[in-house]
Image (cartoon, rainbow, N blue to C red; front, side, top):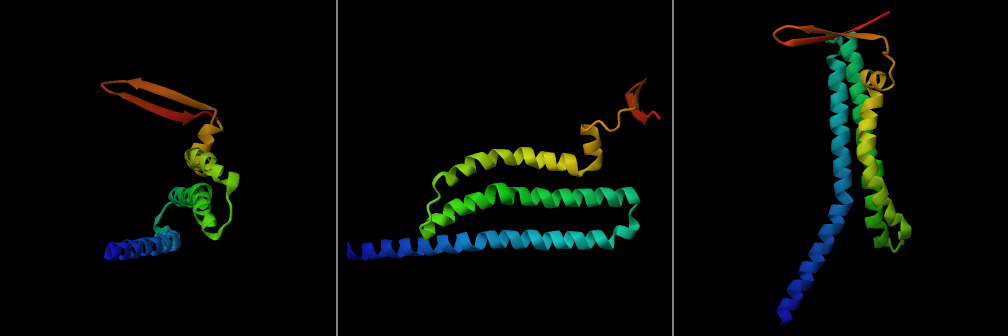
Amino acid sequence: MGSYKYLMLSFSLYSFVYAIVEILTQPQLSITTILVCGYKTYQKMQQVESSMSAKTKELNNQLFKALILQTLVPMLFMFTPAGLVMILPMFSISVGTFANILSLSAPIYPGLDATIAIFMIRDFREAVTFRRRHQKVSIIAASGAAYSVSPEY
């Protein structure tokens, strides 16, 4: 029984050290990966900007800004509260009712994610806020149906 006790003790210690290292390094690794990929994407967009039309540049900028916000929202609403709830008790800091914020913030994320896309991309925003009210829809019947939308001024 003596060697088994030391085996279990060493396994428990190894598991504890591994968990601490994982908790401390995983967020930094994820954030570093996000920052590097975001920077490389921004650089590539700047390199090919001269070969794009004005509309394509504008759409790419809108999509990039939406992507940045869609990256920040889960960090703020899901990962930060979850990380605090897990890490604060390790330092004998009581989380108390703050632990309930996870059940409040997690359901907010999907709605915010879609809302960011809708309001950061101009065409989506205009469709939702009905800024293009004067449009005429034409339906032409043929072997297949063709639809066209043209603005009335």
